[in-house]
Structure formats: structure tokens, C-alpha cells
Amino acid sequence: MPAHADGYAPDDHLHGRTLLVAAAYVVLRRSDADGDAVLLQRRTGTGYMDGWWAVLAGHVEPGESVHEAAVREAAEESGVVVEVDALRPLTALHRFQRGGPQVEQRVDVFFEVTAWTGEPALREPDRTSAMRWFPLDALPEDVVPHERLVLDLLATNRPVPAVMSVPG
Image (cartoon, rainbow, N blue to C red):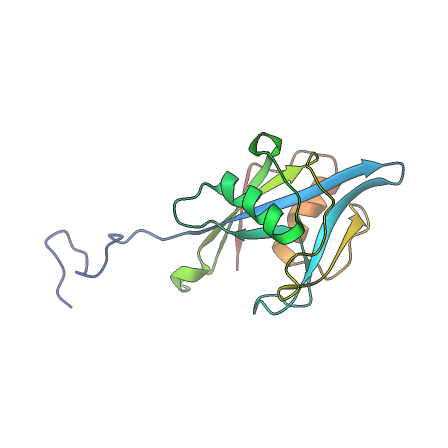
């Protein structure tokens, strides 16, 4: 296909730039006499990491900010109401497959939430087979790997890097 005068193919509306798929991740965290715990759900029927434990998460929809997506996903997946001001940024994680398809170029924005309204409950039984609290320092082995990376860093009580990059 001949290139435009600017050197890009006619169907390259991004002009050679990478398109990133954005997702919001919500780490619901509580502290009590037993220590710190995070809410995880077991994925099912999604086609990605089914059978693995994961935090509340989902893609940013058109016309929506990553903050709005985090609030929406928390409500859709667990029924809790999270105020935007309650979202504490943890990290942005760039995941990619070098030379891979555009859909594998992702940016995952993680938020920690310690204040919400309502009691978390499984709301999407077609996508989640279980939901429960786990001690932050005793997570199950089968946590989605890139999420486990963030949770393990959070468990150290050291600052989580503001931006991380992991090849897929």
C-alpha cells in the first residue's frame, strides 16, 4: 500500500503511534486486628487467566476517565460505592508484547481504596466464581502475575514505584 507524503500508510490513523488499552484496578484494602487484607475474586468465563485470583478491575470505556472506570468497576464487580476522592494512586503498569498485536499494548492504573460504602459481594457470577478477603502477607499462589507484583510490593510497606513496565 503506498504511503502518504508523511510516510505513513493510508489506513494508519495513529501515524505509527502505539495504541494503549487502558484498565483501572481497585485494590480494596482493610485493616483490623488480624492485619491488612485485600479483596480478591476468582476469575471465570473471561478467557483471560480464568481460575486465578484477581483484584477488582476492568477496561476504561470510551468517554470515561480511569478514575471513573475504577469507581464503576468496584460497583459492578462487588457492589461497593467508592468515591473518586477515596482512590489512592498506587502505580501505572505498562504491559506489552514487543512486536505483538496492538491489543497487547496495555497500561494498567492501580488504585488503593480503604474507604467505601457497602459490603463487598460477588456481583458477576458469570465472570467470577468466588470472592474473599486474603491477608496481604499471605496471598494465594495463583494471583494474576502482574497484579501479584503490585500486591507483593504493597505488602512490603515501602512505596510502590509510580510507574512500572513489564514485557508480556
